[in-house]
Image (cartoon, rainbow, N blue to C red; front, side, top):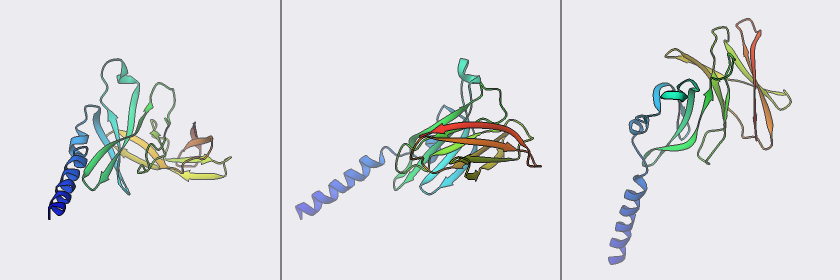
Length: 180
């Protein structure tokens, strides 16, 4: 009887302690670094949020757009280190960023970026010596237009060529990212 009671108490203590690291989704979103959420993409074990960061001072013009994976588990939501942002210091209409996978639960790697011209209507990613092509998902919301694609984790160094196409199929802008 004492063993059963001890086991139950240990289990309850375990539940309480492991649940302390988890939060309600809204608590994570109250993060001071998030100014505006532009899109939430539901994935198998959580959600990836795309947002405009709240930057003040010198950094306000350097980062325009970020992505973050928030993991769903048995006890609620958990912020992760799977996150990153695009930089707006380049003179381009198609920003891009590669986010690597930081944990087994992550849906990353992720390629994503902002589109700053209405001329781009389709984004495609070429890799593997241009033998593989993946079309990115494009989302427009709250004055932002961006693209993203979940990709396979590279086994070696790889170059991704991201191309932004017009409605007529003409390449408007090209960007490159390396990973691995």
